[in-house]
Length: 266
Length: 328
Ligand SMILES: Nc1ncnc2c1ncn2[C@@H]1O[C@H](COP(=O)(O)OP(=O)(O)O)[C@@H](O)[C@H]1O
Ligand SMILES: [Mg+2]
Image 1 (tube, rainbow over the protein chains, first blue to last red):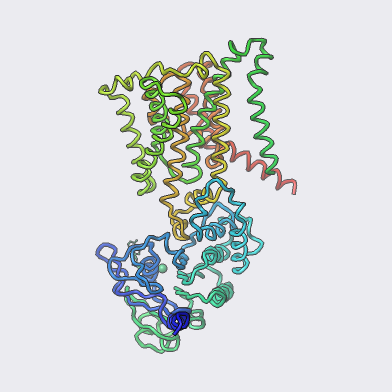
Image 2: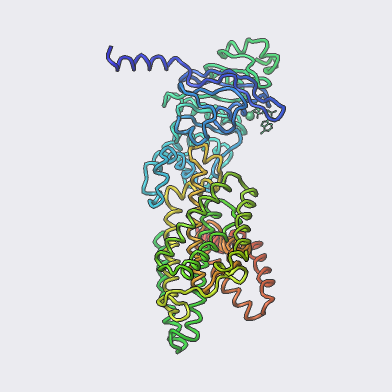
């Protein structure tokens, strides 16, 4: 068989495999175990939701996966390699983008510059060219403008980020991620604090981002309608452990989940 | 807008270049004595301090690193130049190179140790380094080399640059030094690298999360600002014909902080204006009120911080913005 055929076989295989895997991932804060031996598998190309009550450990799990925190024990595998304990700044290069539950943007600079910085970050060597004018590299700004248009912030480019309304700041977070062209997006409550009527629009944007780039999304979300409607798979986290995992229907009909979290409402 | 800014800069440079001649013509005194000579000296000191302030602005105003050890670089530049000129009789160009090399090594060392911690810890670590150097400069063991608490006196400045004999030359060299430094830092702050500095100032965690190795960028900022501060320290030693422990004292760091905040942090032109303001106001208050002047200066400083929280340049910019808004 020619080599190219092998590659093709490989491609088909990765298509069906997990892009992200955690193995017995654990994180302690002092004597308190916030994440407790989590084995999570996220399939390539899926929208995988992580739900669970406040304090369940969702953000901590995200932090351990995306290198914001070091896990106490366990491994993180991404795209076939072990990325446990890799430095945070290497994540973008690997294709992992991360948004934060609490809005986390560059406040006192323009909206476009927020996103342009993320586009520039994909080329670390260019970022060390201290004798060139940043405006001489227009491709980053073009990329940033594209990302802003994608999330519906076209026309807001020159505003100072801090002055955006809350909903637009959440969209800006997404645009910053998008400019890094990630293969895997970890979105920690992207709709947090948004007006209810804005939520479907943002979710549709997220769906579009996934479909356009054949990306995978791991999502933390509290709005159950959104979760049930958009997810391919759902994992339920409770007191740091995975309580259940499955398709939306399976989760809805799971008694244990109903008792622990959904309160019988679904 | 951009062109207008450049025009202002060029106009100012030309005005400063003509200043000694204009003053000589106005006062009727020869250019190398009396009032013209005195004011050339005053402004030369302002130029040197302006570079020192700009170097601090790169670190604090642009990258958001609040170092309390900046005097270390200023003093290291002064002492390196002084020792090599006096004890080793090195030519000036070699002294300049040596000052740069020393500053790079110090910047790498202090950066590598202090930039791993953040906030007030970084401030304390940098302060500790500067204090160590201060103590070292006063140590009697090295009196032969450093002059201990008396400082290194009688630095032999090359005749062509003598601040006493060739004042006009010294004035122009200081002016060129200042213009060149400003141009260099301005370029850096507008480059892709400079944009990352600003990102770190605004939100370091986010800068790391989008893929920047912020430690390296902060190290770069520390080394670059250290080199400039050391060169300013060298010029200061040449002007004074001595290097003394005061150059390494905490008050010298605080001076950089004051100039930067008064003028407007993160604006480059602001700290330069701050340097001129502090030096000239200090002179004015000293002539008018004698040794009580620091007290009055303190009051002026409190007033500026209270009423112009973003410094002179910040106040100026918001005034322009308000006028534009009114017109629209
Ligand atoms: N930095 C920290 N130090 C101590 N405890 C923490 C820290 N971060 C999170 N926790 C604790 O870990 C638990 C899980 O928090 P988190 O991951 O934020 O939950 P979730 O995102 O699911 O609401 C909570 O009890 C929280 O108080
Ligand atoms: Mg959370």
